[in-house]
Amino acid sequence: MSITYTDKLETLTPNHLLGFFVDWPSPPSLEKHLEILHGSYAVWLAFDHDQCVGFINAISDGLLYAFIPLLEVLPEYQKRGIGKELAKRMFETEVLNRWRTLDQRL
Image (cartoon, rainbow, N blue to C red; front, top):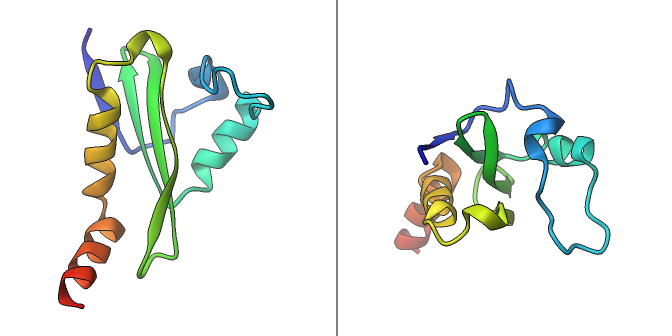
């Protein structure tokens, strides 16, 4: 298993997003999931070759605050540190670093 990480969505298609939202009563369609990611302030994706196996997204005002509404890893890839790595990369994203810097000055 060789997991790679990217914050680029240009080549992501709905078919890359199969298998997420396990046990959700009303999961978004693959197309809606892709739309959610494109509408986010920041996104990180985890890939095993051509298969997306995890993702995290953030919504932000771009100045002061951000929150992470979704972090998912496919069930068969869980407990391998992928979610932790996605969160680490997201917290290194510019707006989240800016918020931590502001918070330290207050």
